[in-house]
Image (spheres, rainbow, N blue to C red):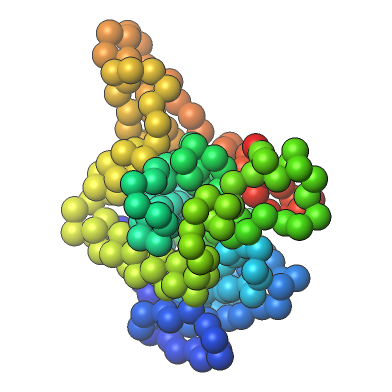
Length: 255
């Protein structure tokens, strides 16, 4: 799969250091990176990275341009999730666990840290190549001061989980580089390499289960002694639910 990153340039003071191929769009703290990315994607083009300046959240979204039909192009989510996990692992305290909850949640030492969303043109048919995809990310950087003690204890933030300093710029820059590497890996070795990296960070529900990601992005799970077709978890249905996301607070859920 080729998700082209057109060579574009943008400059914002005190902004993430992005590699060539990205253009930065900075929003004030009340902005919504994912929504704005979807609004401007058709005109802005691949490699546009929308970033919201917030101290409590790491929030950004990147525009991609796939060359596959929508029903298989959604697998870009897994390349993005791998890049996000690699970026967090590069900046977190040593010997800490970064894992996934199917398909779009990021967990740190088993606590919910945040997650990702994937957007595409509403009018695009499953068999058509979408003009754009938007991969959006929100991570909890610091605990909110207005939370009560019960809520704060149930939440996981980077600062509260032992990050000495939450360097938002560095994490976003690291993600951007890892994302380019992930798509290069996809192009050179096929999607199986992306799926393998993703599944390594997805905890097994039962010992010995055999897992795969279907061509449409669904999760397939089968036990070695099981008969019949594997259990199927729909990617499209899970993305629509976005179980990790709280639309009222516009951030990761607590607990």
